[in-house]
Structure formats: C-alpha cells, structure tokens
Length: 521
Image (cartoon, rainbow, N blue to C red; front, side):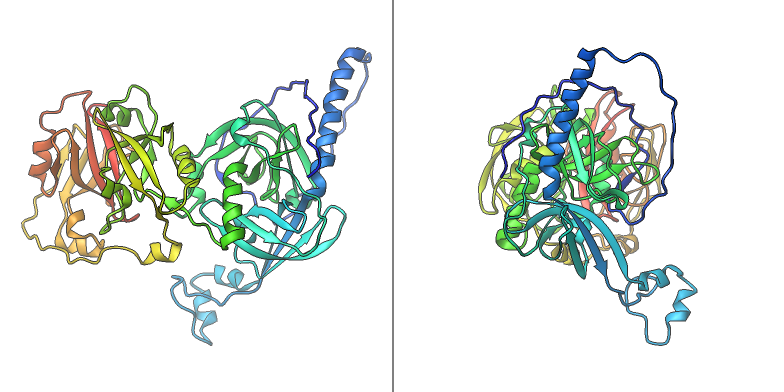
C-alpha cells in the first residue's frame, strides 16, 4: 500500500442538485454524443492569494487522482446468447416454434442476442483481487479487465453477493497497484470525495464532489430483489454515470470509503446524486467471498422496517428511531421469535449499541456469524424488554423461492358482507375459502381482505387493496381477526389520535408486517 495523502482541502464550492426522478443502476453500455461550448473571456486577473488557495486545492485533487487511478480497472462483460423463453418465462420454446412466440413478445428476439456491458472495479491486493459490483459481473460468460497502463487480463469471478451488490473477481499476476481502505463510519457529510471509474466508455475518469448524506435507503431498496438486502448508501454529488459502477469513492486521504453503485436520475444519466456502498460493509462481504466463495450472513429471522411517527407512538418511544419488527417466515419459527420477540416490537439496541434505522441494525448484525448470540433491546407498547437471540444463517435465494407453508386451508362458508371503516379509511371483506386457496394463504394467515383504501384516510400508502390481509390486532386489545365482528370489537373504542397496531399479511410478497395507524391521521 502507498502512503496516505494528507493534503487538507481548503476551498469550498456551491453545488446545485437535481431532484431524484428515479433510480438507475449505474452499469453503462453506450457512449453518449459530445457537445461543445465556447465562452469569451476577459477582465482583470484575480488576486494572488485567491489563486494560491485554488492552486493548493487543485494540487490536492491531482495528488489523489495520481494515487488512486492506477489501481482502478475497466471491466468488460460478455454474455452469450441464451435459449429463448416462452412469453411467461416458464419453459423453453419448442424447436421450430420461435417465430410463433415472437409475434406475442418482440423482446424475445433481443433476448436471443449476446450482451456486452462495461463497468469499473479496483484492485485491493497485489496478487489481483478486485472489488466491484455484483450487477457488473452477474451472468457474465467472459470478463476482461483493462488497467490504466493498458494491460489486459482475463478475470474470473471469486464470488458475488446480490444482497449487498458486492462482487470479487481476480486476475492472475503480482505487484499490482492497490488502494487502501478508509473508514466510512468516520466520514462526515460535507467532506470532499472523488469518484473514479469508466463512465459512458470514458475510461479512468475522475470527478469530485462532497458527501451529501449517509445511511440512504428508502426507494433504493427497489434495486434489490432479496428481502435480506442491506441498503445503506453513501450519497454524493460527485458525478457518477453508467459505467462508474464498481469504481471507488475515495476521501481526501486517497482511501476508499465506498463502491460507486447507483444514480438517482429521471434520464439514466447524472442529475446530481450518486450512491456508494460503504466500504466497511463491502470489506466484510469481500472477506467472506474470498474465504468461503459465498456470504455467510447471520440474521434474526424477522422482517423489519424503518419507523414512522405512529410506530414510535405505538411503541411508547419519545424519539422516532429503531426498527419495527414484522412477521417471521410463515410456518417457521425464527430465532427472534423463539427468544420472545414479537411482531410490533421496536428494536432499539443490539448488544448495547443504539439502533436508529434498519440499515444500521443490519450492519450491526452483519459483523456477527451464524450461531453467535446477541442481546436485543425492544420496546413493546411502552415496556422495554431484553432478549438473547441466537443468530441463524440467511437462506440462499433458491431456498427462499421454495420455502413456505403448504397447510390445508380451513373451510369457512359463513362469509360476511363487505364492511367499511371510516376510522381506518378502508373497506374489508372476509376471506373466502376459494380466495385463500388461490392466494396460497394458510389458515393462520386468513383474516379480512382490504378491498379499498381511502386516499384521504390514515391507511393510504400503508395498506394495499386486494393484496393485504388483516390478520390480527396487536394493540390495544390484542385479538385475532377472522370476521368483521372481530375488527369491530378491537377498534370500536378508539378515538381520534389513538394508534392501532395491525399484523398484516401480503399475499403478493408472501410476507407479514406490522402497520401502525393513527386514527383520524
């Protein structure tokens, strides 16, 4: 590793940021056309003192770029043509029937073609290990790595983790230039950072900006399919474009604090905000991938979500911080549930470390191994409890796809008529045996199906029509919900400003969650 660069940056700038219009993974494929701009100059020269400040800052950026760029690599991915799928993606198309299916889905012709893509990465060991994004190398049949000195190497995938979008690849050789790791926990909003990569086919591009925020998740969770994804991004206004994916985000010491991964844009190109995976998270994933070829992730075994104001009120918290516990895996008992943690609890600390949000909880758990025991502090409707939870290993994606409970659905022919609840802003209907069977809902998950949601009511964007099933009232007056009468009993005494906690099962996501609703709010 080369020595750290300690030049202090002394110049400030004003950044103009564009509002987020959508989320686009920054893996680039096409070079955009160039434009030209000319501007007339003139006027008196600036004072020498002002020029000196700018020169010092410029020299600092130059030193960082010269230190980092030799360890950055350009990654080219090639994927061979795949067998054509049916319009529903279930089976291979029988020989001789390709043209028949193309008339229903013209995209099939594109899916037949080979694919090429490009991205970035950076060398972390002198013998050729490279950190990059999972989405840069996923499904690749051939990987080619190009260094700054134009040497070209074939690369192999050591391991990749879709839940963090981190991957490790390797090239053969020795004495490669490397970049050192920094500590993103110590990085502060407003600090200068540089992003290095290969955007839009422009190899080894360096851009500068500041850390705009830390701990970003929210809509970015939509980039991940896995329920175990850890979404905890560093936000920066350093220009990041398609092709930057996998490249380093470095601090003023020339140390990596993140892996550039995504951009927020309505056009697919830089609009002011980019996102990087924190290096402390990426480093633990990298170590697992190199040692085991996969990530051995410890989990509590329950779904969790960030708190809303009504969640904090229901839990008896004065501050809106913590992670709300939803349900576990249907038909299975998780380590957290075995220890005594219940749906509706709010996790506020792990082993004495305060938990403010879901991403922070996941990162605290991430440093543990399956089989280890952690102490979990929860708030349960005004009461604090502490439980010892023995962590288990997260299932892989194939296990998730095949999981579930296949219990017989209980027959219930006495179905009530639809009912409306102005207090909650919803209408509900008791789930019929036929609907339960079609939705693959077990007897334990049967309840009242949400049929409509009032856009002006407290359930708007919290409950979803045709897919959410109210299974239980958790607080106040805990009660299983099977009929309209059950719900009547549980909410009849609630007044404006009260919060009711519901256990809800979503038939599309096949997952339970807790929904706290403020009456009249």
